[in-house]
Amino acid sequence: MSLLGIDIGTSGCKAAVFSEEGGMLSFAYEEYDVKRPKPGWAELDTAEIWEKIKRAITDAVSRSLSARDPIKALAVTSLGEALIPVTKDRRILGPSILNFDTRGEEYLANLKEALPAERLYEVNGNILGNQYSLTKLLWIRDNLPHMYEKAHKFLLWGSFVAFMLGADPTVDYSLANRTLLLDLDAEEWSGEILKLAGIDRAKLPDLAPSGQIIGTVSGHMAEELGLPAETLIVAGAHDQCATAVGCGVIEEGVSTYGMGTFICITPVFRERRPQRLMIERGLCTEHHAAPGRFVTFIYNQAGSLVKWFRDTFAAAEHHEAVAKGRDIYPSLFAEMPEGPSGLIVLPHFTTTGPPAFISNSCGIIVGLRLETPRGAILKGILEGITFYLKECLEMLPPTGIEIAEFRAVGGGSKSDNWVQLSADILERPFVRPKITEAGVLGAAIIAGVGANIFSSFEEGVEEMVKMDRVFEPNLRKSGPYRYQFEKYKRLWPLLSGYLHSLGGE
Image (cartoon, rainbow, N blue to C red; front, side, top):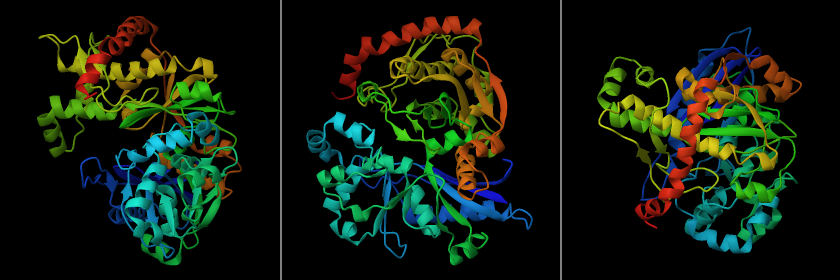
């Protein structure tokens, strides 16, 4: 039997078929764009993307099928927060508003007054913000009342794809957490928050743990996509949680180091941590896909800054490389100097991650000289990204959350230079799995648990996740980076007032 993992992101979707032993039998990717119909708005065209998701599934399935290895089950992992209105007969009613869309900001003040931070965290494990589904749902209710009334359910992307394939309207706990409406401990929608916000519980899907069967692929969808009849649909997970499963991060002491548009560190813990300490550090508490565990997220921009460097300092070379079917990044990374760059980069190019979620700052590069090569600028950017995360990690010990080892996954993990630099600065070993597309692999493992191919998440990880290389910290380089890090930590406090003024405050 084989397993299908589907991963829905903000800018693209992936589908991959795996053997029970973890071999990738096929992989497909479809890219799409964020729509910005008005200033401050950001949404996905649901109907357009659903067609691309189906195309990716069809492509992956068609290149993997064999009579000896039919697909037994599938699961979907996806971005969080963004909701999709659907009818009972599976018709799409509108676009999906993304987490960085400004709609809904007007509700924050009243919500903050009615639901103090401590109480919200006690119930839901999150800190109030406009990035979550709640404020978007309120905006739809008040500004698009016809759509709100007509909608049978508002589904997050993972539950939407499963529903369109034939499952019951169901969402797993980790993805449901991104709405602000889940009671974390009760594992039910919070009656308290629903009543306070004036949201109808009937508009929300049912809840299920990751790894539970929620339906089978319908006959017409199986025929359209080339899937075997009665393929099991299993409740998936929020993308960061599925990624953690896909690189074997299901126990305390180990964390993912997702190197994509953002770097996201996802440590695991068994018991909820003191909420005051978590709130002070801007850290959420969310269900892991693996039962009996929680995760939190430490993140900031990463790949987006590397892309900015590429488009600013190597645009012509990039276009030439694309025309010739080559990847420009290896040659750019090869230009980086051996030791520290000598630059200090403040990676505030857009809103930052925890602890402060700073929105009114900007990026800074300090130390430029006429002789500074572009390779040093790229390395300075990577150092600044990593220093930001190192400062966050220094705040963890009081919470009791420990990270002894990182698992590097995502596009950036393909660069040995970047992974080694991260190990040297953070002074922890980095392990890179053989399959760095951990989101689709994690979804496939979840599907295998639901289909009883694996008796547990532990067995699924043991069977399917294989490690490739260990990057040990180079202590000779760690010392100079410590010195550089101390200078980095002084930059934001020194310039914050000025940068706030540039940001419009």
